[in-house]
Image 1 (cartoon, rainbow, N blue to C red):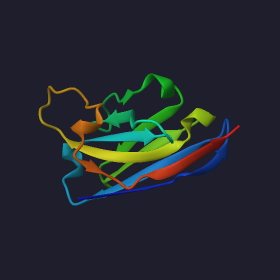
Image 2 (cartoon, rainbow, N blue to C red):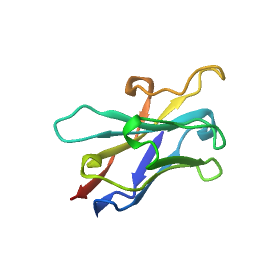
Image 3 (cartoon, rainbow, N blue to C red):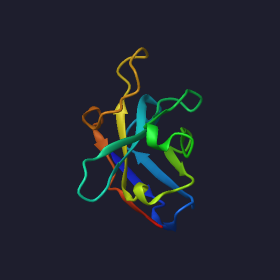
Length: 127
C-alpha cells in the first residue's frame, strides 16, 4: 500500500492550494479516504474525509466552506482543495485510507481508524 501526497507549498493568507494523494496497492474504491494535519507542537487532527465521489463528505468545523475533498476512483487519487487559507492552516497534511467495513458505518474521523498513511506534505500560510 502506498499513499503519495503532493501539492503543499507556501502561500499568503487568502490564497489557495490543491493537495493530491495518489494511492496504489489496494482497491481504492473500497476505502474511505481522509486528510489529516499536524501543526508544530500540536496533535494530528482530522480535516476531511470522503467515501464515494458523489456522497457527502465530512469536514472539521474550522475548514467548512473553505476546503473541499474529492476523489477520482478512475485515477486512484483523492484531492483537497484549500481556499481562503489562513495562518492557522499551517501544518503537515497527511492523506490516509480506511477500509469501508460496512455500508452503514459512518465516515471515520479518528486517526486510529485509518490503517494506511501517506508521508505528508507541508502547507505554510503566511499573514
